[in-house]
Image (cartoon, rainbow, N blue to C red):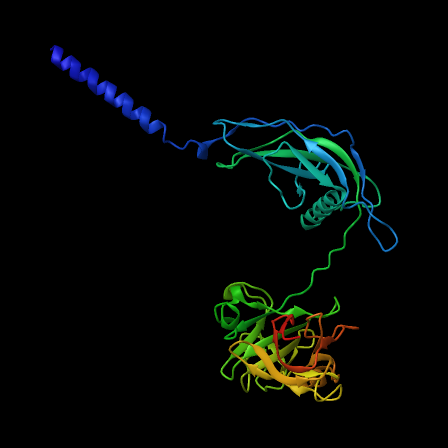
Length: 387
C-alpha cells in the first residue's frame, strides 16, 4: 500500500511540474484586453486659429499648436499599448471622426504633438466624412467650431481597444480645396517591360496626366515591339471591376471607343512611342519617337538634329560623336511636329524631362569625342550619361 501511495504522489508531482513548464510557454497576449483606460488631459490652450499660407501671408501650418497628453492605459497581461487621437464636431458622437494627425500615427508614448496644419487637415477630413455621410450641414469654415478629441487605447497584439472620455477644443480652420486628378492606365503586352504582368489590370501602368484640371488628357512614353498591343483603362482593378475599356474603333485612325468590343492598339515596328490620349474627345495618337542631339556643340548646330540610335532591350538612345566646345540638348523633332506642330515641344536639358520646360538650360560640353545616352521613363523622366 505504501508503494502505491509513493507512485500516486510522484505522478501528481510530475503532472504539476509538466503543467507549470507548459504555462510558461503559453502566449496570452493575443487575448489581452484593456483593463485600465487612458484619461485624456485638457491642454492649456484650447482655442486654435489656423492661418492659411498664401502668396502674401505666411501661415502657421508648420507651427506646433499643442501637445495632447493622457494617462497610460494598462492591458490585462501587461502588453504594449498604442494610442491614436480622434477628432469630430462636438455632439456628433464621433460618427464622422478623423484621426489626428490624419496619418493615424500610432504611438506608445502618452503624448502627441500636433501642428496647426494637422488640425486643419483633420477638420477638413471630418467635413469630407460629413458630406459623404449625407449630413445636411457641412462645417462652416468662416467661424470657429467646437470639436471633441479623444484617445483610443489599443493592445498592440490583440487589437482590443477602448475609447477615452472626450475633451473639447475650438478650432477656426480654413477649407482646403483638394483637386483630384483623373487617372488613366495602360494595360497590355507592354506591361512586362516595366516589371508588371502582361494584361493584368491590377498592375496597369499609370499614364501622366497633362490636362488643365477640367480636361482628361494623358501621355506616356512606352517602348513597344511590332507584336505588342494595348488598351486604356481608368482604374487598377480586376477585370470585373475595371472602369472604362478604351480601344481603337477598328479603323486605326486614332478614334477610341469605350467598350469591351473595342480593338487593341498595335504598333508598326519596334521603338519608343509617345502616346497621348484625350478621353473627352475619345481620340489617341501614337508617334514613334526619333531622338537626337542639337546645339552649337554638334555637327548640325541649332538647325538640325544629329540622330541617335535606339536599343529597345535597354530602352536607351545612344550616339558617339565629335563635339565642339559649346552647348547641346536632346530633341525629338518628329514627335513635336506631329503632336503640337512645334519642333521643340519635346526636348531635354539638365532639368531631365522629355517634354519642354520653359527656360530650361542647355548641357555644357567640351571639345572632343563623346558617347552620350538618354533613357526616357514612362512619365517622361530622363536619365542621361556623357553630358
